[in-house]
Structure formats: C-alpha cells, structure tokens
Image 1 (tube, rainbow, N blue to C red):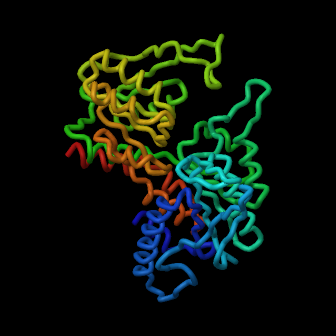
Image 2: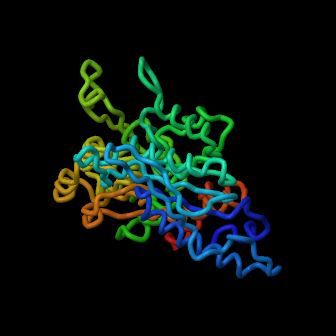
Image 3: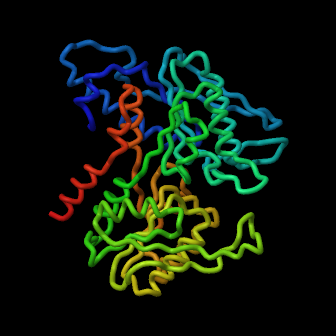
Length: 389
C-alpha cells in the first residue's frame, strides 16, 4: 500500500462512503475492494488499538439509485444514513448502455441524463453528509471547454453548478483541457493522469517491448496531445514526433470542420515501435489515419494509448486496421464503460485504474496532499529500472 507511514499518522475527516451511480458500478466495486484492503492493512499497523468509527469496513459502498416515472422524470434515493460521512459520488457520464422507459419508448441514457442523476444524488445528500466529493473520470462536457463565438460554455457551467450544490472536491482524469478548473478557482479540482498505468501495461503485456531511442518513439496525434507526449518521451528518454491536423474551415460536417490531412513533424520512425498517446478515442477516425501514415513511414508497430476508449462509430474500422497491420495494440483505461465486444478483441489491452483511484480517495479522506499520488515519476523510474534490468 502506498504512503502507509503517512496515513497512519493522520486522522480521516469523516467515515468514508461511496455512492456509485449505476453507470459506474463495476469500477466502484473494484475501487471498494482495494479500499477495504488498504484499510485492513493500515489497521494492522495501528499500535494504539484505537478503532475509529467506520474506518475499516467490509464495504464502503452504499445503496443509491435514481428510479424514473413513466414520464421519464426521476428522483435520487439513498437507502442508508450518510450523516457525517465523507461521501464520494462516482459517475460515468459516457455509459450509453443503460436505458430507461419514457412514454412507452426505450431511451439510452446520454451524458446529460447521467449528469442530472449525479445532481439528484448530491441533492439527496446535501446538508447531511460531512463532505461531498464527485468522482467523474470523464469530465462532463469537457470537449466544450472553450468558447470562440456565440456558443455555450457547458463544462464551466456544470462545474459551477456542482460547487453551488455543495460539492467540495471534483476528481477527474486526463481532462481535455485542465484549465477548466479556472471556472471554480476557490474549490477543489484534481486532474490525474494514467501515465504509470499505461507504461506498466506496455511493459507487462507487449511482447519484446524495448525502451530506448533506437527501438521506441512517442507520437502526439495532434497539437492538443503535445503535453502528454512530451512528458511521456522525457520520462522514457526517447524521441517524440507529432502530427497536426489540416482542416477545411469552409465547411462543417457533424458539428466540426473536416480534417483534410495529417501532417507529420519529427525524425524517422522507420523500424521503431511508436506509441500514439491521446486523451480519448471518439470515432477513432483521426487515430486510425495517424496509424496508417506511421506504417507508411515504415514504423515497426503502432501502439495506441488513450485514457478513454469511446469508439462511437463501432469497432469495425479498428478490426480492419488490425488485420491490415496498421495497429498492433490499443490500450485504454477502465475508467469509462467499454463495449463488451472490445474486451474480446486481440489487439485490446486494459490499463487498470481502480487501485490508483482507491489510493486517491484514501489520501483525500485523510485530508493529505494529493501530490503523494499525483506525482508518479518515481514509480515510473522504478518500473523502468526493473524493466531494463
């Protein structure tokens, strides 16, 4: 367990409770199992024998739900006491698999539906819980993070609304633009990265994976992913290249300007494994085009690492590109819902984030600095030392 010496010298702010919406139930169960193990281990290091109320439990999950009326309206319900608790509400706004009935029709839940359910649970706990924290791995409306004309700034509005409802901390991962936290400058906002988990998955699951300048290169698929790619390349000590998107700004297709071409900037990738790193795969169109261009430049293997695998246009194109050898592996985290079919694909690898998230929640519950878990540079260096032998 991480930071055990630090945790045993501090007192939690309140008994921890996890209110997991149905959209996030699977991840929440994994996080809860790790948290239960952490607390049992920490209790065994307690020389005083003092047992704090609600500190070590068989589970920290509480029963909550958002039942709906026939009209499609809903309400939030928590079926046990949360008075005085340090409550963590978990939601996956991208889980499109859940449905509800409205006037005889079956509707799939949208991000807006999940966000409204989140507010319902917060409203149910407000004034009773000691503190409310929101765990939203995919930040709601984070792709609408800036305004360049007469358009809504949805992410900022959502963050301000949550804070006005009494939320103390918002925990998210790999935000599309972390500067969104400027919308709530007086409130807690923590953005974590899955870099260590990506590297651990690469080292343990990709055969003959060598980390040096002769065998590996990091690629940013566009300008927006540069910061991620720069850190990854610096910590591994390998070269980096990037693509930039040349768009047709005279037309709009599906709400965006279509990409005319991906132009490459960087050294030769010939004979090297390349890691293409980004925050998400949406339709995957850009990522697949980048993969093909890298193979055209004689890259050895193309490995895609993204925090969120949404695959909004399905998996058929990825299957085709895998069969053609354009992509070797696709790695995503388990922070959002993934189609069960994706888990069966031979090219897919999962970077498990549940233990990391449990550590984050444990640190916050003790009111300690999250830098203890945010900074993974030392862990990455230890992993590289073991890998390089």
